[in-house]
Each structure stands twice: as C-alpha cells, then as structure tokens.
Image (cartoon, rainbow over all chains, first blue to last red):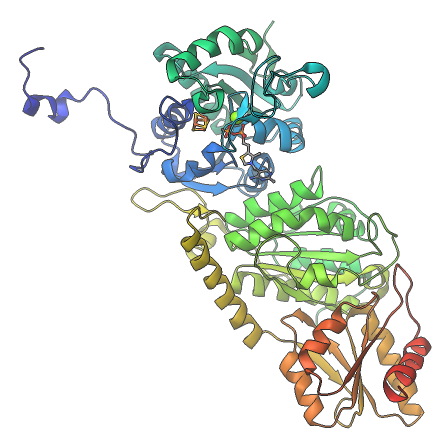
Amino acid sequence: MTNISLEEIIKPENLVYEKTKLMTDNVLSYCPGCGHGTAHRIAMEIIEELDLQEQTIGIAPVGCSVLAYDFMNIDMQQAAHGRAPAVATGIKRVYPDKIVFTYQGDGDLAAIGTAETIHACNRGENITIIFINNGIYGMTGGQMAPTTIPGMKSSTSPYGRDIKLMGNPLKMTELVAHLPGTYFVTRQAVHTPSAVRKAKRAIRKAFENQRDKKPGVSFVEIVSNCNSGWKMTPTDANKWMEENMFPYYPLGDIKVDGELVK
Amino acid sequence: MGELKLMKGNEALAEAAIRAGADAYFGYPITPQSEVIEYLMAEKPHERTGMVVLQAESEVAAINMIYGAAGAGKKVMTSSSSPGISLKQEGLSYIAGAELPCVYANVVRGGPGLGTIQPSQADYFQSTKGGGHGDYRQIVLAPASVQEMADFVKLGFELAFKYRLPVLILSDGVIGQMMEKVELFDQVPRLTDKEIEEKYPWATTGRKKGTERRVITSLALQAHEMEAHNLKLQAKYKTIRENEVRYEAINCDDAEYILVAYGSSARIAQKTVQMARQKGLKVGLFRLITLYPFPSVDMQELCKQGVKGFLAVEMSSGQMVEDVMLAVKGCAKVAHFGRFGGVVHTPEEVLNALEQKIIGG
Ligand SMILES: Cc1ncc(C[n+]2csc(CCOP(=O)(O)OP(=O)(O)O)c2C)c(N)n1
Ligand code: SF4
Ligand SMILES: [Mg+2]
C-alpha cells in the first residue's frame, strides 16, 4: 500500500469510492460538521443506485436545506415553509408513476407544516419524507423548535426549554407511525459511518417502497446535529446528540411494512 | 353549437374545468362556492378525462398542491371564497414568484373576517393589487354570467400558460349561485405526459440523463439576482397590460355618463342604463372583463369623446373607483356607489346615485 504512486491511485480500476453524479459540484452551504450534507448525499446515492433519477422530483423546504436544489442534481421544487407534503401530494396525484420525496427540517415539518405532514401521512400519499430533526431552527439562528428537548437551550429558550411555559417537544415520527396512511416509519442518524450505513439502508427501503407502490408514506427521520445552533464544536455536538437527543428520540424502526414494531 | 345546459355559476365553472382539459382540481369547501368541488366529486372526472379531484385539508394545502402539480407542467385549478382566498395568498405569491401557471376562482362573499355568506365585491384590492407579499400581479377575469363562468376557465388556462402566472376568476356569490342557460364548449383533450415534456421544458418531470436539472423556486439570495427576476416579472406584466385588456362598452358611443362595473354589479348597472335611457339620459355601461390589466387607456378615450362623468358601481365601499380615478386622470368627474357587506344594490339605487353624484352633483 505505502509505495502505490499517485498515477496508480487515480486509475479507474483502483477506484474505491466516487461521489454520486446526482450531487452537483456546488460547494455545500452547510456548516462544517453538519449532518445535512451527509443526508443529501445518501439520498442521492440511493436515487442513483435504484436508477430512479429520470422519474424523481424532490421538494426542498424552508430551512438550512432550502438550497437542497443547488446540491441535488435532479429535478427539484422549492416549497413554502412547511408546505412540502402538500406540494408533493400535488405532484404525486398527477404523476402517480413518478417518485416524489420531500426533504424537511423539524421546524418545517413539525411546527408550521404540522397539518400538511399529518394529512399527507393520513391520506397515505405514496411519497417519501426525509425529516432532519436537529432540535432547533438552524437557518434563522438557533431558535427553539417543536423538537427542542426539555432543558435544551436555544436563542428563544435561553435558560433551557421550560415545559411548563413552552410546552412539550413533539415526537412527530411516533405520531405519524400511528396513522393508517404510513407504511414505513423509522428514525436514524448520520453522525458515524455505521449510522450512515443504517440510514442509507432505511432511505433505500423508503424509495423502494414508493417505487413498488407499497401503500402509504415512507417516513425517515434523521436525528442530526446543528453545531452552530447548539453553539458547540462538531465533535461536542455529536457527543451531546448521542447523550441527550438519542434517549429522547430513540433510533430504530417504528413501523415496517405497515405494521408497528413491537 | 355546444351543449346547452341550465346550470349554477359554480357548476358551470366546475364543468368547464373538466372540459378545458384540466389535470387536477384541489380545493376545500366554503360557502358560496362548495358546489364546485361537490359537482366535480359527483361527476367523476377521473372516468371522463382522467382528471384528479382531491379535497385538501385546508386552502393552504390546496394551493400548495397546485404549486407542485403546476411546477410539474400540469393544468390545475382551485377555487374558494374570500376567507379561503386569504389563506391561499402565501402560495399564490410563491406561484407568481416561481412563474407557474394556474387558474383559481374566488366566489366573493362579504367581509372582513368571517363576514357573511352573502355576495360581495370587496376583494378587489386583494385581487388586483397583489394579495400576497412581493411585487407581483395576476390576470383577473370578472365573469358577469354563468356563461362566462364556464368560458373564462378555458380562457384563464390559455392566459396562465401563455404568461406563466396565476389567473384569477373573480366571481361573487350572485354569479356563483344563480342559474342560467350556458353553452358549454367542447372537450379539450388533456395533454399527455410526453406532450407536457415537449411543450414545457421548464416543468419538473424528472431529469433525463444528459440534460440539465430543472428547479422551481422563487428564491434568489442575492439582491441583484432578485431585482433582475423582478424586472423580468415587470416586463411580463407590461406585455400583459398592452395585450390582454378586455372590456365591453355598452351604449357608450353617444354616452355623456358612464357606469363602470364588473360582475354582478355590471348586470345591475345594465338595467340602470335601460332605465336612464328611458328617461332620456345618455348613459352607457363600461363593463370591465379584466380587472388586471385595467383598461385605463380606453377610459381616457371616452373622455375625449365627451363623457362628463363616471360612476363606479361596485359592492364595496369603494375600491375599483380608485383605478377609475387613476385611469381618467381628472378628465371627467368620478364618483362611487355601492352597497356592501353582503347587500346587493338595486338598479334604482344606482340610477339615484348617478343622478345625485354625477349628473346633478
Ligand atoms: C412563513 C415563514 N415563516 C418563517 C420563516 C423563517 N424561517 C426560515 S427557516 C425557519 C426554521 C427552519 O428550521 P428547520 O425546519 O428546523 O430547519 P433547519 O434550518 O434546522 O434545518 C424559519 C422559522 C419563513 N421563511 N417563512
Ligand atoms: S446552522 Fe445548523 S443545520 Fe444549518 S447548516 Fe449550520 S449546523 Fe447545519
Ligand atoms: Mg431544525
């Protein structure tokens, strides 16, 4: 290994990993260490591996990933804040054979877009939802989200989230799992290589379900970090996430093939 | 001759959506326009043309379904009444910003707030001056008959796709609820997915390998890019103002006084014109068909022809009258008359107002 030359390394037969062509070469606008970029990449890898790009339409939300269409090299629509599931419904209803997915943050999906999320899930739209839960409003500078956990600090809960005053965090994923219109509901993470592999498997299943016209929404939550919003270094943010977010939002499948996991 | 039917305005609008070759209707019930979705659900357009009809969870969701389907090149329509139209404004602003085609109808009721289910024309400002946020316009068609409720759906789609913007059919509770004979136009075939891909290269239908991705968005983070986009929109609106003005001038040739009205007020004003003519008064009706673009130039022409005064007749406290004033630029007297909050004026009341505010005043 040690004496392999640069010329050897760049030979096509020695290629071990290649960036998917479904990610553009635009520089990601995300903070270093942020989970959004990894989540984008694995979603696009799956579209490429399943060879779905020619029939896929993605919906970008309002949030840090508003510019997802600058990075995902597929046909995309940018939706108003929280409305992505309605936009996806509109497309899917007139193109039942196409693959339609939304990519949304927790403020987008679980606060302003609660009604659109619940009703798209309850109608059983044959779409895929990728839900990035970082417990905060990243884009607007770290305000409290519906998912901010008890005691967690944010710019609008500077002394920590006080349940009595600010209400409870919303476990949207558990909630939609109990609706008859969801087919696959899972919670994943992308902060370690093994987590990425599992998340990728889940996203693959979510798109395969849609491709195979399995009845209902395939919903993949990714518990992710927001080092900027949490005011931590990327490594501290990941550690804090494991110690505080995962106990509140346990990883794993919640509903598989239309059945709640016992 | 097309098929003749006796229909409610709302039903004619719904039937016209099917016949215009619409791909989908997304809506939410509200009086006085619930017949639109009820008619569509009963008619099973899926079996007739393959058209999709879906009752959304809210007007907000419905207009965003429109955004998605329109962004993918489909011919889509929604409708509502005043409170529901207010909820749609966010989506409409996005649709205008992203330059998507769609047709929607507002069967106006009295406001503000929950108001009344009785007819009104008090949403004129909202319809013609923006409604949602940002510097945008939409084409506004004002039907004055059940016939036009049907015809304007077809025309609306033509204009929406020609200019890629929302087209509003601004109706009211009278036109929506009344029954009249209507001659229905023949079925326009729906476009196939292949035809959509050929006709609308901007539509997000899935990126073919070896081609560039398409993006539907209203966002431009850089101010100069957003200004450039706004300039493009403004140029489009200018073209529309120059080419798409529609109105009907009734008894205006020799008129000294003109009633300016649209929708059900125009129907009432037409009766007033007859009454005035019987009294020997030279009164004409300038019926607006497009509220945006507004026929400003043609109104100035009426001044040159010797018109002494304009009475803006509308079921509001005075909204369209501002555009009449701007149009005539002081070349003749302008006044407003209208009952509002759900009350419909009578032809006699309009004649009285004309005599007092314009002729005698
Ligand atoms: C109607 C509306 N309200 C508020 C905003 C401001 N806003 C932009 S992004 C955002 C929160 C996004 O948070 P989240 O969905 O969690 O995404 P993240 O940035 O954390 O990935 C808010 C409140 C907006 N753009 N539109
Ligand atoms: S603010 Fe947070 S969510 Fe947004 S890019 Fe930075 S780390 Fe990621
Ligand atoms: Mg967030």
